[in-house]
Length: 211
Image (tube, rainbow, N blue to C red; front, side):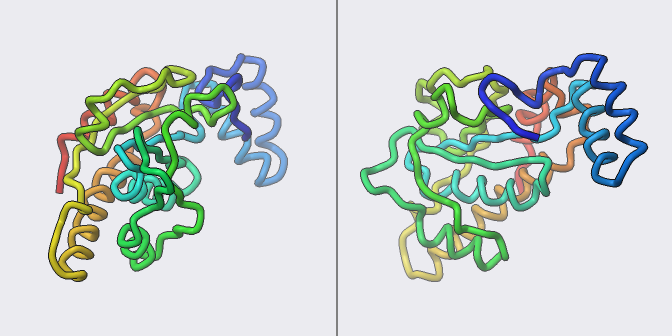
């Protein structure tokens, strides 16, 4: 089901759509899946939940979170990430990509980008914005299209860890596991806890549940 800045899957669907969904349910398996999606929309559930993770440089924590959510969301959640001030030529930290690859998580589409890209009129519409570093949480954010829910999940920056390659890699693994814990809680929420009116409360409650 497509998404745009002017038509969000999180909007309530007119009752007329309910009837068409009921009819579709009697057709093929594919149409029955579409019918279920329509019913979720009718009840105010978010069929595809877009979540944008923010940090300062968009090189480590937010990259890990984007990849983990897309991997664990199984089509119900889609992760995105951006930074408030990526450095010129900023790339995802190689250790972030390495620990994700070790865990069997795809990294091919990950790249560092500025958060301004998601404030444009033609940007994907976010349902939830999560800051994952304290610096980004304290900065003035752009005006996000659609006025998404917000939350803050704080993690130490694994890029700050000095020492051997193995100790630095271990720091990235630990951060990945900490993020994975909260992401797992998010994707396990029942539909009634990710409706438009409760998504922010649900995401903020998860912030208090660390490893």
